[in-house]
Image 1: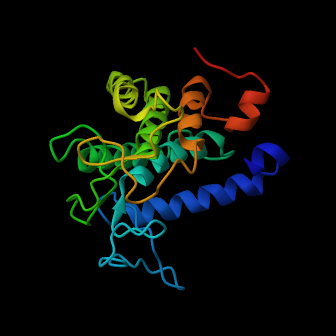
Image 2 (image 1 turned 120 degrees about the vertical axis):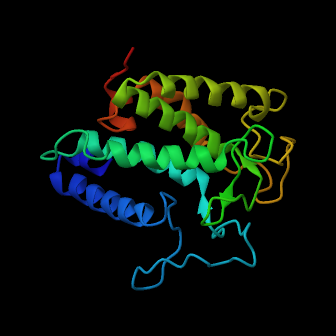
Length: 224
C-alpha cells in the first residue's frame, strides 16, 4: 500500500523481505506459520499452550493467517518490480492447501477451526468469521493467479458457508464467531469488533492482484 501511494520501490522491497521470512518460517513447520517470537526472532511455538484461546496471542497455528498470507504472497508477487512473476505462487499454494487441510470441517461440521497444534490437530474449534472471509479472498487470488478451477470451486464453497451460517441476516454484519456446531458464540471475542475482513472479501475478487485494494478501487480497476 505504501509503495502504491508513493511510487517508491523500497516499500515493495520491504514487503517482499517480510514475505520471504514468512515463507521460510512456514516451510520449516509444514506450512504452518509461527505466530510468536522472542527478541531474536526465534519462533516460540509453545507460547500460551496453557491458554490456547488467548484473544491476542493464541497458541499454535492460526488457520486464518495461513489463508491470509496465501493471498498476501500473491499480491506481493504481482507488485514487486524486478522479481520474476510467479516466484511466490508455490508458497501461496502450499499455505492455502495446509490451511484447508488442517482447518476445514476437520471435526465433522462445516467451517474452519480457529487454531491447530504443530501437527495440524485442532485446538480451538471456534469458527471465526474472519477466517472464512480470508479463505474467500485467498481462493479468488489463487484462481486469478493460476486459472485453476479448483480454486473457483473453493471460492463458491466458502461463500455458501458464509451465506448459510456466518452472515447475520437479522441484525446485520457477520456473526463474529460461531462454536463448533456453527451456533453464534462469544468465547474468544464478544460482539462484532471488526468488519474489514468481511468487507475485503466482497472487494478483492473484483480487483487485480496489483495495485493494492485502495488504489485499484480509486482507479476503477475491476476485472471480469
